[in-house]
Image 1 (tube, rainbow, N blue to C red):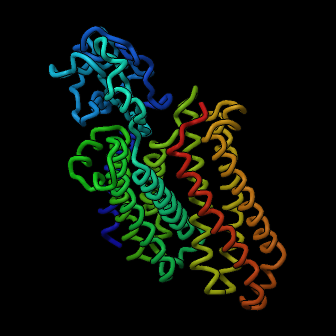
Image 2 (image 1 turned 120 degrees about the vertical axis):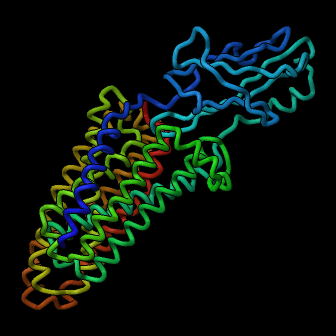
Image 3 (image 1 turned 135 degrees about the vertical axis):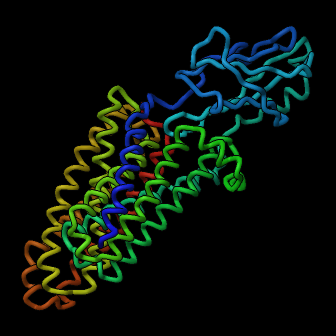
Length: 448
C-alpha cells in the first residue's frame, strides 16, 4: 500500500489536465446540414464551373468536409474567399465535361457528435444535358450514406461502452460504499476486470468505426491506420481518444483495489482517485451524445453527467448484487448490503428521472418532435422499457422491506432469497434493453 500515493499523484495530475480540456470543449447546436450551394442543385449551366461553393448551417472544419465525383475522385476543399467558417469551396478538375451531366457527392461530419450528413448535387452542362443517357442512368442513384454494417457496428460498440462504463463505475462505487469486503471476492473482481477490458476495447473499436462512418466507408476501413489518423483530427475522435486514456488511467485505480482489497476500498486517497477517473469517463462519454444540442447546452451537459452517473450507480450496483452478493447468501452481507443498495438505487433512479426530463426538453424540444421523429419515438420506447424496469425494481424493494429480515433469520436459505434473485435478474435483463435503445438514440437525428 505504500506505492498507492505515488500512483495516485500522477494520476490526479493527468486527470486535472484532461478534465480541463474536456470541460473547455464547445457544445454543438445541431447536426450539420447543407443550407445552399453555388451553383444550385439542378441548375443548367452553359459550361462547367471552376468551383462549387457549399454553405452549411454551422461552422465546419475543412477536414470534416468531403466532396467527390461519381468516379470516386476527391475534390480539394478550401475556405471560400468571402465566406465565413460555415462556407467552403471545392475546385472542379480541368477535365470536367463540356456537355452532359456534372454530379458530385458531399458529406460532412458534425464536429461534436460525429454524425455524418451527405447528399448529391447534379448540374446540367450544355444543351445535351437533358437528353444525356448518362444523366438519365445516374439520376436514379441515391445520395451516399454511411454503410449499414458500420452503423450497426458503431451502435454495438456504443452499447458495449455504455454497459462497461456502468459496470465499472457502479461496481467500484458498490464496493467502496457498501461492500468493501467484496474487493476480495473472486466474482466481484472478475466483473470489474471484465468491465475495464470491454470498456477499453469498445473505445478502440469505436475509434475505427467512427472514422469509417465519417468517411462513408465499410467495415474494412475501420481497420485502416489512415482512418484512425483522420478521425483523431476530429472532435468526436478526440473525445474517444480521451476516453481511451481515461480507461488506461482507470487501470491504476483497479489495480490498486485488486491488490489492496478491502483496505484500499476504505482508503480516502483511493476513493478520490476513483472519483476523478469516474467523472472523467462519464464526461468523455457524454461528449459524443446529443446533450449539448439545444438552447441551454450547459444544462444539457450537466444533466447528461447526472443521468450517466445515476444509471451507472444503479446498473453497476444491480449487476454486482446479482452476480457477486446474492449467490453467496451470506446473512450478514444481505443485512448490510441489500438495504444500502436499495437506498442508493432509489436516489439514482430519482436523479435519472430528473436529468432525463431536462435532456428530453433540451434535445427534443416539443411534443410534436417527440411523437413524429425517430429520435422521439426511440425515446418513448426507452421510457416504456424503463417503466418495466422500475416495476421490477419496486418488486425488489418490496422484498427488502418485507422479506429481508426473514432471509437473514433463516441464514440466507435459498427458497427465501430466490424471489428476490428473480426480480433482480429481470431488472438486469430489461436494463440491457434500455442501454441498447440508448445506443440507438446516439446515432439518431435529435428531435429538434
